[in-house]
Amino acid sequence: MNRLRSTPTAIIIATLLTSTQVSAQMQTETLEYVVDGETFTGYLAWDDQLERRRPGILVVHEWWGHNEFAREQARKLAKEGYTAFALDMYGSGKQAEHPDTAQKFMREATADMDRVEARFTKAMALLQHHESVDPERIAAQGYCFGGAVVLNMARLGLDLDGVVSYHGALASPIQANPETLRAKVQVYTGGADAMVPSDQVAGLVREMQNAGADLTLVSFPGVKHSFTNPNADRIAEQFGMPVAYDQEAATRAWRGTLQFYRELFEDQ
Image (cartoon, rainbow, N blue to C red; front, side, top):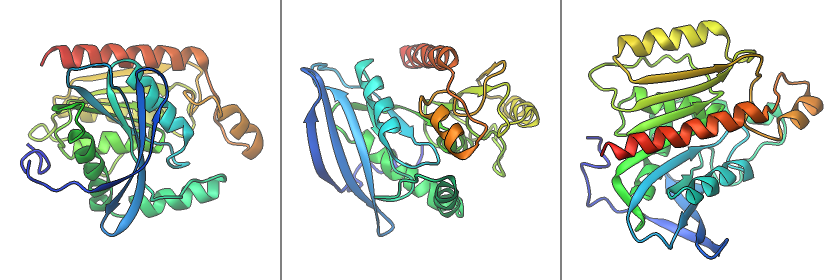
């Protein structure tokens, strides 16, 4: 068990900034919380018509920061019967509009892996303590930068049932260990992703096989980086980046993710 679940008396402090009823069932909250003296802003979404406690899913944003795309993924998960928390890895107000700023924020956030873990586990604790969540059923999914984050949290042995990476970097200085790896792993990548070349894909497969991981990896032929984000085409045109939205790949990845969660949590 990780340190969060082994300390059920931990005090969780967060400030509710806004609470919204999106539909007759959908509820959302914007939460402000503190990690190591720095303020972060996350976003919760759940269906309050479901009486049972349900699995919680953490959503980790792209390198642009905690934005509307990440929040939309949380709402989509809530519509499927989960409680989702779109967490913040950068700090309140740190949303990038230019790749140079995004790169700066990402480097600052990932300069210390202990810092990455602390920010992730604080958000995980907030989700686990929500009244709608079964704290023993937690998974995480991430996009681009966030995909790398969730894979690294699995590598570190956090008590996650599963992680899903969408067009995330697959290489890491951390290597999965068969003695600590707990999560089942699902990866979606583009076959034409210049930021995640084939050697990274092959390296991840070797790493996960050596760790005895339950790995599902899907590579979409001809698909570029950021294929799940409808804004990718605008970004490609504006900044000349090798990214592109692909509706078919995004739809297949989403369907595969929902099937992954159904199978993951039905086993418990």
